[in-house]
View 1 (cartoon, helix red, strand yellow):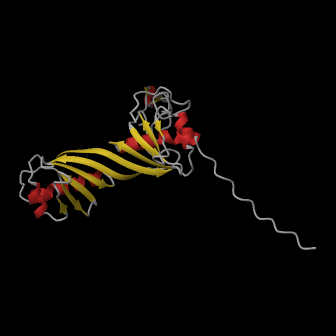
View 2: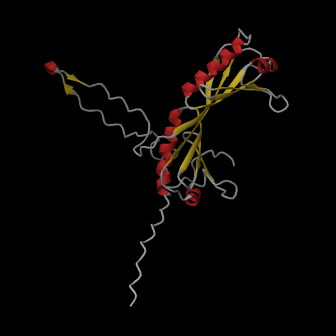
View 3: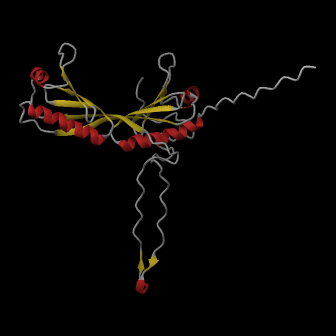
Length: 255
């Protein structure tokens, strides 16, 4: 499956790509600047512009919940992984299987991959702040193991994964045909539809139940923007729920 380079073939009414509906979450169109208001003494004064509201959850009221934040940092020193694995608690090292020490801490509950170059990958945090705090703790652990020159540098969030539920079933086949330039749907191999959004550049896994997983973001706002875009698309492919079975009719009394 190749990443698509442009919006050609987007279905009419799509709000997921350039030219569609605005991506800002909960963003109403900016109001026109009000006319000048007469100030004391007859001089006209233009009021300060009202700041645009911060984009966030849309009118649907659904907020994607962050499930995982993957971040990297650099200690700036070379590390002897075997020594670290022997001295540190909650650390594993099997160079035949993977060229990094696997270390875990309980608070924030995360896992770190520590490489001999001094680079660390931290995964499992539920927020950007928790990921940064965990990364600092791993750096401090390495310092205490005899690497006084280790420094906490180059922290960067590499991926944010979030999930939510739109609370209605989705016609995945219809969505796949209507947005075929951006979708990959092979139910024989994977039950979800893979939707590759271009702006923001997010990959969404959409399931018939209405559950959605969003991945590939580096900023939380990209998660919100992507979901607000796709929500309006999913409404167009909402699957009607089956009608409830009619109540049983009582049998007529015996003659």
